[in-house]
Image 1: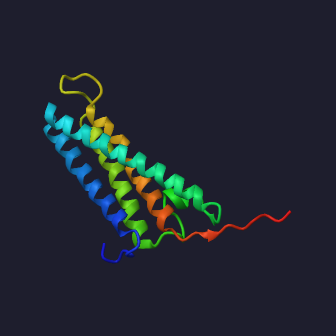
Image 2: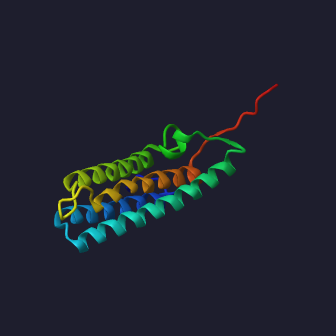
Length: 155
């Protein structure tokens, strides 16, 4: 991550660190699968979801303010598509989002039933964690993306 631009580096590092915490707790929860492990996994997933929602709202608010002068698309904002985002940032952030999706899917599929055999598992809350990745992507782009200037339509 040393090739990351200085601007916005903290957001990228935070996203990677929180994604790593999710992987560690989700894998632990799926492996041990006792009550304590399930609580650790569920609380971590819900906390990361809450951080993601806050980041998403902050990014949306900031992007709306910037859209008065800048031409911003949803894919540029939340999927970091195109020129507004430097390639090293895009790779790290999209990889973190991908890891969140894969981890949520793998751990939920590993334990589709509860400890007593009933359908459903506490690991399913991991599917909320990719909101973290989307929110952090949007936050980076809204604060640091270099978008084209908005062109006003001529009547």
